[in-house]
Each structure stands twice: as structure tokens, then as C-alpha cells.
Picture 1 (cartoon, rainbow, N blue to C red):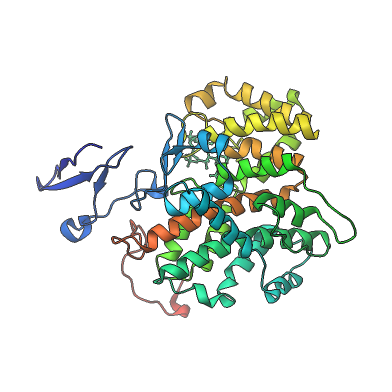
Picture 2 (cartoon, helix red, strand yellow):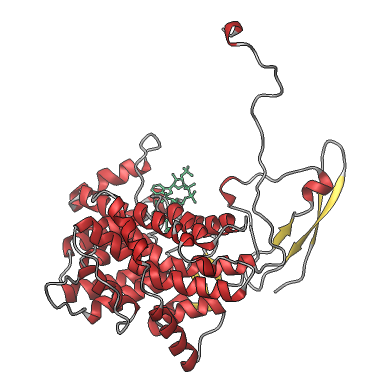
Length: 432
Ligand code: CMC
């Protein structure tokens, strides 16, 4: 950590000067504190897409996009992926430290105790068409939860905030499974608290009342790994949405629902579904050059899905781990090997292409995750839901941090107005 620095800003036209001060983080770039820029100088800053703006102070996740580093609470994601579990990572993200054995056992027990849904919530699914996108169902049902769980909506009460986090982390797999079963027209399968988080999820997805279903431990293990990698990613679009929606004092279920809605976009979590569509459309290695040419063509809206990232200008560390897991899962479970081979070739060819090299476009987390989901038997329309289940942990951690931040205020960005200046109303008969 370096100390703060002072910057002098000078208006070249008027000669007027003012000072700004930077604040250091523990690691990563300093931030220039501009909180008093408008009250002091009558100026706003302009940063569409927030590429240079720190919207908050956070202690949860750190990314170095140039070095391809991702750390949760200081722990490199590779170490967590190699040694931890999703439930342990959830504890770490929420509470800041790795749990001891007793803390982990208690946290795990608490999450298992909250997996069931109020039966009235379950009946919501009957109101959706069989072909409703699961993300629409999940966002809607999560948004309605404040109507059922009033005892966790007093955001000023630390106990309420804790129960809320446990409840939503425990129930989001149940909601996802209900959406999936609804789309299949199959009966809902109740959660089983004797199973761990990912085994329970797979059981709710694939079991039917007519016969016994045993979860494949490798499938549960692969899912647990994917969930660790997706659990948090600092101030991404959906997390910033959760923070912004929550900053008004809205109940936390609504804030999470807003995050789910933001995640659905193809530039964000919806990319995993779009990658599979794209690979299926490319179909064969011989068509790769045609699609790369389209991705590079400014007049074509086609982009190489699963490539590029706002922060990573190097290989996304999550993508390397997922690529390795693809090998393991496909070898063992016999998934769509040709699709994986096509993805590997696409990556290889793109990474030698001047356009992708120059723009530092590397595979991101979504490039390979869909191939594993496909091997686990999860349909494309559920891919982004799987992402949402894992990211719920990160959303909760950020929402809790935002609510207790002494500097916290309602999020309310300003704008550069370029519309019409004042003009008078013209009666309709006098308009041209
Ligand atoms: N294919 C072709 N060109 C690309 C791609 C791509 N996938 N991504 C970026 N570019 C080009 C883009 O056209 C632009 O070129 P130029 O400077 O000539 O205008 C340049 O690279 C910079 O792109 P940008 O859109 O300004 O970058 P951004 O930081 O605003 O967008 C992104 C980041 C992830 C939205 C973008 O790379 C993209 O659309 N990728 C495909 C969708 C995707 O895989 N999204 C998942 C992101 S990771 C998981 C998550 O966030 O949930």
C-alpha cells in the first residue's frame, strides 16, 4: 500500500486550479477521490460503462486483469478451486475468513436447513408457460420472495441480513430446479438435506418420483468447481446492479432479482448459452475462418462469444481451470467431445489472429463452462441459471458490504446532458 498523493487540476482557459487527492488500496491502482468535485467545482466526471470508476470501496474480491489474477478475500482462485468447496467459499466471501471446522459444519447445516420453499412460492410456477425462459421465471420468483419472508427484510438488523443470505443461498437451487421441472412438465422434486449443495441440486434436476436416482459424484464435484469459479467477480454488471438497487433501501430479494435480470444479458452471464449456440452454428473446424472474419468485421454485429473481457487483458484464470475440467469431465462422462475439440481449435486459431492479439481478447469464463454443463446433461436455457446460483453468494456478500458501508449513500449517477435547451410548449395545431 502506498500513501495518498495530491493532484493539481488546471483549467487551461481560466487558469483556475484545484486539488484532488488519491486513496491507495491494499493492492491495485489508487483511486482519485472526486466525491466533492461537483459541490466544490461544479464539475461531473464522464465515464460511460464505468471503465475508470470505482463505485465503492470493497474488501471482497480482487482482479488484476493484466496479470490474469483473481482472488477472493486474498486467496487465489486456483488454490480455492484446488482445495476448497463451494460452501466453504460462500462462507469466506460472506464473512471474510476461512471457517474453522465447527464454523463450516454449522454454516453447511444452516444452508441445508433453509432449502425448502413456501408451497405458495412453488405455485407461482404454474402461472408460467411451459416454454418460459428459466431466467425469467427465476428472476420473477426471487423478486417475489419479500412477500413471503418478511422476517428478513429489515436491512438495518444484522440478524435479518444473515438469515436473508442463508435463505437465498439455500433456496436458489430449489427455485432453479422448480423452473427446470416446470419447463419439462415433470413434478417438482423436494430438496434432500442429506445431500451436499451440488448433489442436492442435481438430484432436484434429474430425479423423478417413479424411480431411484443416484447422483454421480464426479458431476457434483465438477459443478462445485464451476460454482467456486463463478461465485464472485467484484463490481461486474450484475453485482453493481445489486448494489445500486439495494442502495435505495429496497428489500434484498428485489436487489438479487435485479442482479439476476442483469446477468441474463449476452454480454454478461448469458454468454455461456450464446457460446454453445455459436459453436453449434460454426459446426466444423473448416468454418472457423469465416466466423473469425465476421467477428472482425465492424459492419457485422457478430462477436466471438466467450471471448474478451472488460477487465482481463490476459487469459481469464477461470477459463484455464474450466478448460482442464472439460478434459476430465468429457473423458469420464463422454460428453460432446467434437464440440470441445471445436472450441479448442477456435481458441487456438483466434489467439494467433492479429485482431484478437492486438485487442487482447482471450477466452473468458463462459467459453468452456457450457461444454461442461452440456456434459452434465443441463440444457442450454439453464446455463445462465447455473451462473446465477453461484453468483448469488457474491451478490449477498456485496449487498451486505454495501449496507454496512459508513460511506454508503443511495447510488445516483449524474449525466452529460446534450438534449434540447429550454423551449416553450407548442399547441398541436401549430406544429409543422
Ligand atoms: N469478438 C470480437 N471483437 C470483440 C469481442 C469479441 N468477443 N470483444 C471485444 N471485441 C472488440 C470490440 O469490437 C472492440 O473493438 P474496437 O476497439 O475496434 O471498437 C474492442 O474489442 C473492445 O471491446 P469493447 O466491447 O469495447 O469491450 P468491453 O469491455 O466494453 O466489453 C465484453 C467486454 C465482455 C462485453 C466483450 O468482450 C464481449 O462482448 N464479449 C463477448 C460476450 C462475452 O463473452 N461475455 C462474457 C463476459 S465474461 C462473463 C461475465 O461477465 O459474465
